[in-house]
Image 1: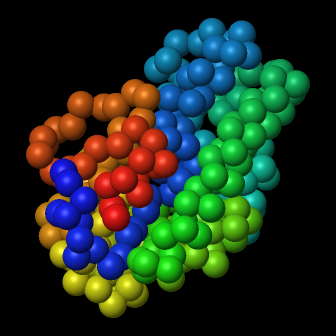
Image 2: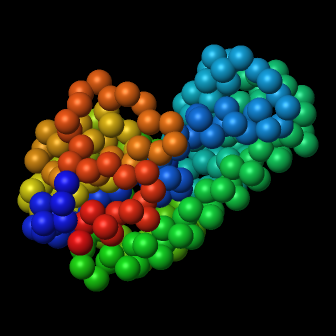
Image 3: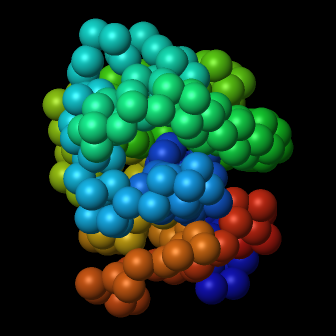
Length: 232
């Protein structure tokens, strides 16, 4: 996809987790690596089960809904360790710190990227999250560059439901053909955005999952730093 094919773009919408806080690496994949690094060699199926138990516990949880990144991940990792019946407080704290340190590095970099884009584009975030994505955006210095921040929990609609995308488009006051969606999930981000007529940029990351439906991404990048070379 060449730059001229994005020349009508006036807005860019981003996913959050895996897109703004990493270069396309799913949180679960990051936790597989963190458990390995901590010397906790558990079956991947067990880590996955614990991860999604924590994921579900976080959604709309009063302990989470106003939490910044570090208290969020301390809670998330604690629930994982409980689900795995692990009693290793040092490893638990270390894993949460490591996850946050990596995320914060990407968020600092991407805050600068959004600042460079905001004079030319209307920007927004559309995320399946826990109710606190706006808190994380403010904490990371992203909010000043964003015109809309949508979190699935308070909205009551999750991607790939078209309604969450349509709400974002209404907020930007732009037609779908003038908006680019950038996300790391092909099924939740790229497919529905393509169906609505948006241009799409798939952030594939280091471990891209084979998409169920090919041909929905107008461009593929492996790092968000490549976006300015795609969207002029």
